[in-house]
Length: 255
Ligand code: ZN
Ligand code: FE
Image 1 (cartoon, helix red, strand yellow):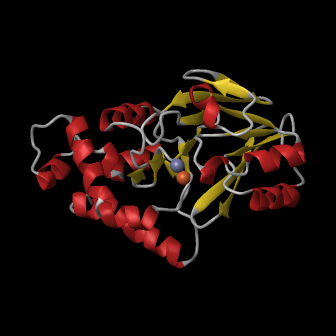
Image 2 (tube, rainbow, N blue to C red):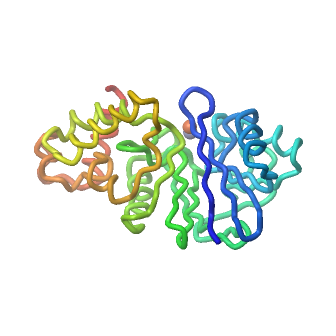
């Protein structure tokens, strides 16, 4: 038995995710950008919604909570640390807590930086990571409520996961991220190949999500402050990794 993942577009550039534990028949949505597409996906699959798993409080992630809870009676799960900002929260989780979707086990990692209370859901036995707005394909979330050091610590938790871990990001930002990444590490061959691949996918109207931790380590400039090529480009040969990360983030903000 396993965990089925159904991904579908929401709003302008968000993805919605339904997780279905085959053994128990239980279903969760990761975040609620908007109720309509989530209800439609549930109906397509013939699944009933049991849980909302929130990564953070932003409206494009928790905006559909109350409507979905009202319509389905589902249970809302989110960060205990941000309970006051998660609409309808029933169960609060913290670093290292486990959440069982039937027989599928998720481990919560706290990843502050984008927001103070951001969490991600890692299913270690399935090799799946629901990363919210912490890690994007070749990008990372903007630092609305955290310092570069906090976000760097958060990203370190993710790069320690197995390379084969599939990374489900909450937005299709990949093409813009790739264009920026090429300005930071233009001689990274893996990055150049991937940017071309992404253009092909998008031209065909196909998603670039999921990624994997291994691919992100090879191509995502926010995970590569140790790269000599990247350091040379930024003229930061001796600076700390967090300083290089901070400079990369600063440049992206004004790209
Ligand atoms: Zn957000
Ligand atoms: Fe978002």
